[in-house]
Image 1 (cartoon, helix red, strand yellow):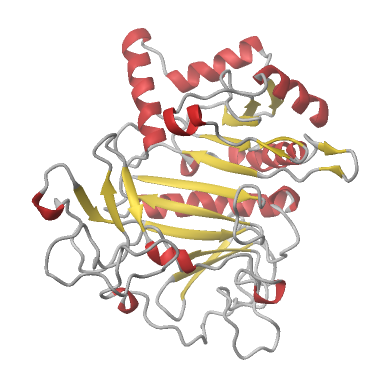
Image 2: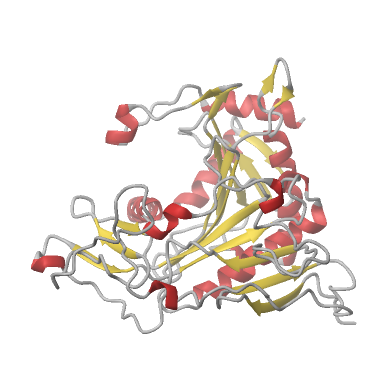
Length: 415
């Protein structure tokens, strides 16, 4: 007999033309007996029409610089359509210029949460999800740092005729994934069934975005906690589709290529093998996944979660690996929320960044290996790690603890 679907995927278009996708795992939506609301009643202007002539530069604190020059000179993209990218000539890295994000939503009150479901019976509200309830939902970010604008050619130009400078349109895509309709919960508390739906959504969006011709890398991540700098406390993550291979991934691929040339081995696979042999920093094991604190962990709390099998990205995971990942990730996140204990208030909900490292879409896939990196800036209750001048200015990191101590604490709270 055919296997019942785990998730029902339903796509629609928001009032300004952005895509929204419901991922349902509950009835009657899973079986198709009912459908979430698909129309968006908001009087929003077309997303691309609003970008025509929108300046990409501006004074700090402004969403737009109305006094931008109009002398006809190429000033590096001051009147570009949508976000632009500028290449830093000193290190070759692309920097997104997205001044329209200056006015994005920032810590709204509970009754103005744009990620909450629509209020029952309300004719209109400026929320992003039309339905009165949902399981998991993904939609294009209203304030993207990367956006492919129709008709804009993706090519590198040199402003003011200076070969030392390079710019290009900020093509790509930025999406938001809401893990739950409940604004008071967290990813650690969604439960195994919902976590599996979230994993399916991550994998589905990675596969779809990887098909876009301008995309070179897909990055799924979650920012959690005010200490990290989140602007919305509703449980959610983001998915970025980059038009280039990110600097962190590029350095990792370069290391992996050098290691393969020198030893014939696969760097990330051999790292996992070494951690399992030594076991000093291993904190979690399931049938298909291993959690460990990396040998040179730089953050006060840092752990990697990797599949035992070498796979390039989330879509490549088997059904069994996805189910097991749900269990492993819930256990890990629950342990992280017990890592720090405030003597007055008890366990601290850990502020963290959870970053999925996936292989690039085209080049270097044989060198990369899927893994999740979770790290926190909280070094002790009410104490944050601020980057020192040597770290921010030179990239020369100093750890305030030892990876083995991090691992020992995680094993203690996850026992």
